Amino acid sequence: MSQPKGMKKNLANYGDTGFSVFLRKVFLRSMGYSDEAVDRPVIGITDTSSGFNACHRMVPDIIEAISRGITQAGGLPVPFPVMSLQESFISPNSMYLRNMMAMDTEELIRAQPMDAVVLIGGCDKTVPALLMGAASAGVPAIQVVSGPMLAGSHRGERLGACTDCRRFWGRYRAEEIDQAEIAAVSNELAPTAGTCMVMGTASSMACIAETLGMMLPGGAAIPSVYAARLLHAEQTGTQAVRLAASGVTPAQIMTPKAFENAMRVLLAIGGSTNAIIHLAAIAGRLGIRIDLRGFDRLSRETPMLLDLRPSGEHFMEDLYKAGGLTAVLRELKPLLHLDVMTINGRTLGENLEAAAPAWKQHVVRPLAEPLYPQGGMAVLWGNLAPTGAIIKQSACSQELMQHTGRAVVFSSLEDLARRIDDPDLDVTADDVLVLQGGGPRGAPGMPEAGYLPIPKKLAVQGVKDMVRLSDARMSGTAFGTIVVHVTPESAIGGPLGLVRNGDRIRLDVPGRQLELLVDDAELARRRAEGTPRAAPVPERGYGALFAKAVMQAGDGCDFDFLVPPATHTVPRA
Image (spheres, rainbow, N blue to C red):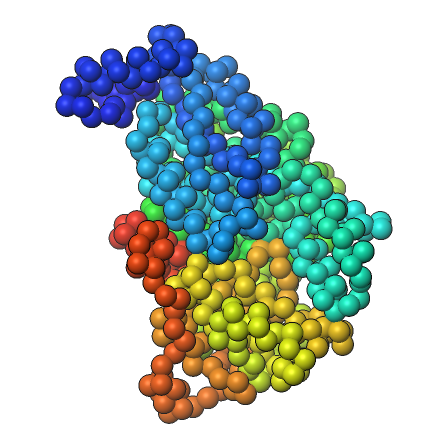
């Protein structure tokens, strides 16, 4: 027996199917739909526009273009609202609500009558949340993004959010520039609609979505305000109708091989450290486990090719003009699985063969002449990180890649804010700044607090970087010698919570080591005294659910009850 399609599927249950169909038709009439219109394939469109989401200012125009493509292909476009998360407008942080957005997306796709769905993402957590929800819902889906901003300019220097937000704020804290200049700079850091125009989390996840095969080729790098962004959206709408007919689901596109490709690309573009958490979460929804040791093995084999901030000099609009992500994929061909199927019905290899020929450019390096000899990220282990920690080695100070220093410990975000600029803080440039209580359970939500500010007393002396480590995250737009995602987190008994002021810590990025130079007997004594407490568990609502169910960074910080048992591990040994 064939399954219901279009407006006849997912009926409200009144115990009378005929009445359910009749009542739905009544309300379709109230919206002005004819019988001919509602007999078409129904394509849902996730509307992530919001007055609190600057990155999605162009979403209404994108919806119009998608709808045009759906209608031209014989479908019925139906936009519907889902949660929208923008990094700087969400408290305590957008990661805290990513899983809620994923649940919202999954349940609305599952509950409403749609034959396929177009996912409109953009700002950092929206793309992973949408892909997580779509993966679990199992309905044909295709991804688009709002696209990156164009670069700004200040006194002849090109600027980009949020790498230069942090750089100029650091200069302001160091008293290198005054109030008038920081105000002038703020007008140029985000000059157009769109997401951050550097290789932050938004750009990283756009590239990952395209690599996974969930986005039509060429979509990751198109600037938000370019006409090409709307043309790509229209083509996406047309493809969504084809998906509805074919019935191809996210699980058939996002395969273990596709995730291996995505990890390679993440390393080659110098992508955000957040992206490995999001990849683990998306993969986890499909029963695929990401092995961090295998990820690090890929990093040693995969050179970084993209000269784009914060690890290089260019911006996303430059990548677009250089050929988009295709230019990166073409160089990585010897390392990729070219036989994976993508959302347009072609394999990755076929898409690359069909792409325009390469041309001379200076944004994507040849595989034999990389910007950095290994991938942008490395995974560290040791008695401080028994189950791993992440460092963006492409954005580190090379002189700090192997460093031993004295720990200066902050027990919480509140402690950090209270003491970091204290002129009496006992700290030198050779010390290691340590933040505890920044993990998914401890903060809660694993905020982007891993980019600890340089203590003001050192900043005014010209110190630009120090070794910093935490169980928190950092923005993909950030830079410096920063170790994040230390697991297990301190709030659940991880060794990071045992660090005390004055302890010696050794970082060895080439050796992949992160060690607390304190003997086991002393660590056992400290453990008996107790580790930093997690944030109080709320008694009700989403906060209570989050505290009970959130997993660690290596598992994607998803909720344990949303993740099926793993059937595959990637990358393969």
